[in-house]
Length: 316
Ligand code: NCD
Image (cartoon, rainbow, N blue to C red; front, top):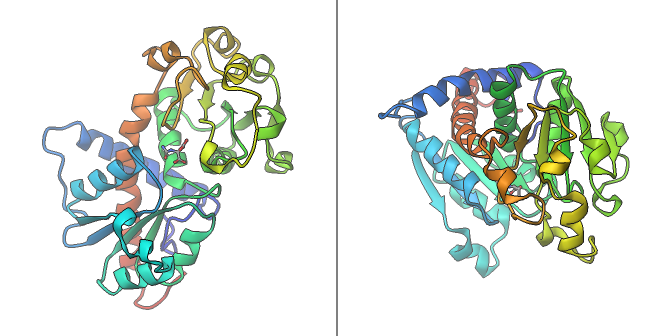
């Protein structure tokens, strides 16, 4: 990883070499996580604070486990019961925690850009665990590791991202990462859920699943992010499932060995058929969860290494 890297705020600021370095180290953490004793002391003595201002199951649990397995002291702030409810601003909350000398702050926030702003105010490493519709870098990294392990490479693959692209930070981070690693990315979804100007990102846009899934290596499904919708973006869930829900018939258009991914949480019968999600020959959804812990361990370890290498006081 470039020693300039002080935070992990998005895929946008990563060089392909940084991505490869994180994934290579994550591979070794996958091995460690499969052992009975899963501890190292890479972050021993360091303090990690998790601040989740939005609901989370996988991301929060895996950041917590990742920190603990690396030997850090990990604290989960219960943001629902914190002084945020008394009107304290995000920045004041962050400055308060910063005064307790944490080394890593892991932050999820409903507003795009909030995590970047926070990173400018504190003097520890900040990891973005998802900010609004903007970025979710560790999700894209764990998806990349899952793809690399399943396909044996992370370049020149044809990858379809399907569904609610417009409200998805997962889609955005994946488009950036997969593009940087020289893959062909296709976006499939109804026009109401497709942001304009996507061709600028070097992706192909499809309205029809059968057409878009033709011969792809990877099918990535997304949840309808209703919490970010302010109106009717789809006629009905039934209609949406009919046109965009992944079932065996639609998947038959992809390559015979195409893998199926989903970042979770899944809505079975809306964007994906339960049988496809559970098909161990096609679905790598559980592997994605496993890779999540390893990727977060690798990202935190490398950030701490690059901070140690940085002369005191120099921040990027
Ligand atoms: C995603 C998120 O929060 O952006 N979930 C996750 O982190 N695994 C996707 C989603 O909420 O649909």
